[in-house]
Amino acid sequence: MAIDLPDRRGQTLTGAEILWDSLCREGVDLVFGYPGGAIMPAYDAMPNFPIRHVLVRHEQCAAHMADGYARASGRVGVAVATSGPGATNLVTGIATAMLDSIPIVCITGQVPSTLLGSDAFQEVDITGVTLPITKHNYLVTRAEDIAETIREAFYIARSGRPGPVRVDICKDAQQKSCVFEWPDAPVSLPGYRPAHPVVPSDIARAAELVNRSQRPVVLCGHGVIEAGATEILARLVELADLPVACTLLGLGAFPASHPRNLGRMGMHGEAWVNTAIQEADLLIAVGMRFDDRVTGRLATYARGARKIHIELDPAEVNKNVPVDVALVGDAATMLAELLPCVEQRSHADWVHRIDSLKGDAAVRDIQQLPDSGRLYAAHVIFDLWWATAGKALVVSDVGQHQMWEAQYYRHETPRSLITSGGLGTMGFALPAAIGAKLAKPEAEVWVVVGDGGFQMTNMELSTCAQDDVAVKIAVINNGYLGMVRQWQEFFYGRRYVATPIRSPDFVALAKAHGLEGFRVTDRAGVLPAIDAARKTPGTVVIDFRVEQEDAVYPMVPAGADLHDMIRRPKPEAGVSQSPIYETGEDP
Ligand SMILES: Cc1ncc(C[n+]2csc(CCOP(=O)(O)OP(=O)(O)O)c2C)c(N)n1
Ligand SMILES: [Mg+2]
Image (cartoon, rainbow, N blue to C red; front, side, top):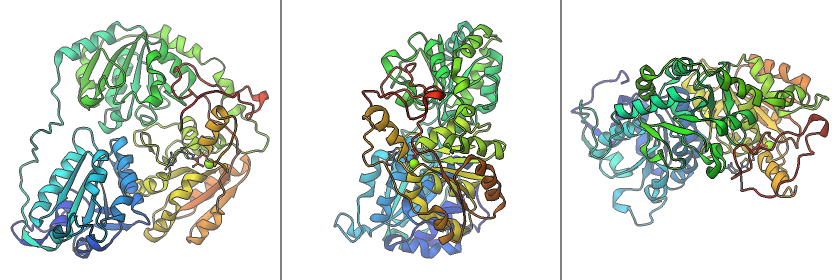
């Protein structure tokens, strides 16, 4: 998708001009960044190109915004920073994108090539720093290499298993001039083959397993969304009558309201979903990587199940869970190959069995939370889902509220939930939501964030105000670093060390930025506040003062068997009467 711009090929341009022209040619019209000495030549050239620049308040947030932009749109997001501290500030954002396979390109200025390695002012070997957290990394010392590097960077970021690519450009390379060239031929890199051939015998073996299975479960992950495989997956599910369990990042890949959608698996997944996985005779894992948060103890994980793994990255196959058949390739291609080989089936007994596993879970749902006027986080999320008819694009942060969002906001469509899964980065939500809103201006974007995570990046409210970005922010304010407090409650004898957290007045904070803010302290206030936020132009902060010591149920303790879940105590026992458990790793 090239942007309409004059053809400057064959002209003599500065490296800085080549950078922006190359970005335009890659379809970029928006970058998130922060200037500084080593990137100043690039910034100086920027106004001559049809590119919008959003000035962030911290470079970490530039990477998160690029990430949110990419997750919302499926396009490559771009972040720009200077050398040294600008570049090191990007690190958490790059790692977040790496762990969740998000295509972003991060461009950093570097000291002049003549000073490299001299500990020059603001010199950091950012290539060395980011090597393990990028899909690929470049240090460019000559203007002549900028165009080809940008071409390769975008190709690598978006092809195969997507991921972050960082391009470090020395200041003198930005300043010097050379003839701009942009070949018509597509990029070809020796040793990098993102496409994998279909192996017909593997497809046949997988189809045979599906056709013979009595108790199948599909494990639906983020790769389904990245591959655009939602519809083909639904066709397979309906043809072979397959129950579907989703990972956190797979939510939305398969409609929540579909009768075969069981819900979410894993540490805070539904009890019946985890039990169904443990009782299955076949797991069909699609675009997921058997992360420890979804498997629990590997030794006891789905022992009776044969396993098919549809996965883009061969390095993920047999990494955590040995499988019977691996279909290496993107989910859309592999499911399209599999579909014609699969027989129409009905698994009524198995579906009935899973239904019966739900047991008393239905009486532990939101209606059973005490409704004594006190406000629970689950009330807020449930009401938000209801008020927005499930159609908002929700960006959640990391902690208890993230799990409640996943439980009570029912996602029907791909890319309707954005959250940091693999790295679990607190502070991600607000900046990622800004990126998502700019990618999809027509979307109603809601941030669901804890009082802890909001305090990590709420300075980006200032970016919302300056750049006129309208996101609605639900702060789930429980006065604690709640998820850590919950682990302390369960596994550390209720010693709440360093988890009570004081917050500023979030309503006043919003107003200090020239934005609107509301406070809600009881259930009755939730819907009116959501309604008011939706009607108010611009970014709005709602400070929801929720029950302080609620816990997320159910829960598989880290390293425990997947079916060995801590359940919410019966309502009459009260939410704070949860049992004490002996072991647990850090959240
Ligand atoms: C950057 C970062 N630091 C620390 C953690 C560890 N951690 C995971 S959840 C959590 C608590 C989050 O608190 P809050 O934002 O208030 O959300 P809550 O759990 O209360 O909903 C912490 C500290 C993390 N995930 N990310
Ligand atoms: Mg909190």
